Image (spheres, rainbow, N blue to C red):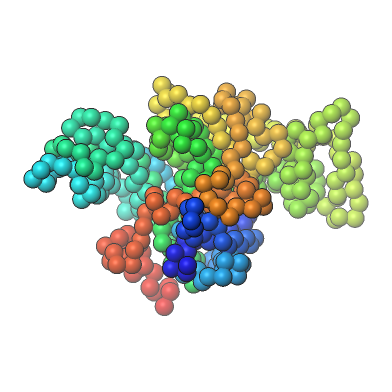
Length: 404
């Protein structure tokens, strides 16, 4: 079992989550979970190495204790404003004598699609095939075994800033783990929350975390556009704290309990503790709503502007799925519907993975759970045997001065 264990590590702005899963009789099953406060990250970027390492160690220790296995490596979620995405197309000739597409041809064409104009300070995290084309026939999911002389692929490529990714890897390494792969957060969240039908028809996934909101647009079964905006739930908590003149802890509790819709009845209100915590005062629901609603609408409008700018105008989208801790905000769905003009639902980790308790079937754990689903199949792998030729290998050599 120990050799089969798959671990996902989501190092967020507010919390770090570690999930351990194994292959069971009915597919993957979660056998361990750990969560710890995260104080060393801000908007997806490491700002304190020691605090981030402590958070990783605490979360993985809890997951190991629950699972009864030792965690040696993990698929690690990354996010941040430094993440970029693009789509690229590549073509190769099928080289076999019988003109039958083989796995080697697929590997070659995907590698060819990675040849893009990339600055020296950026690295490819994902090159995900959207569809293949064989001798002009488009829309092929798996071309292996088909006859043809020309193989093309359309890929969705996600890149990140080398220094930002390096700092995450340093923290993981110093916490006693190896990164099996880096996964852009919303791709993992999509793996645990989206239905195949939604990905096919067209869907917008918004993963609202503490420091960032990640965007993933799916159509035709695959990711078409991904991005990050540097606004999350923490800025809303800060707004509530300033507006109601209370502590951040009290503001977070008020936000989660009342959000943008709670207590909107005429004359409704609730008690709020003062900054020194010694007294309370009555606050009208309208006062909270006046703080929360504009910020939430601004976040959704920022996300919509990104999508309008980067997604083809003729693309039909059928739904918006909200996940991440920010999706727990009461009354958030109508605000999203107002901005996007589409049906909205909150995305919970679904039943494709076993061992999910009610506590884990929550939007704030969508990324961590999605890592063990997406990682083995779609993650950019860093096998040790190829470390010398991968970009991770180059990073590791560069980091030896720090690690040793």
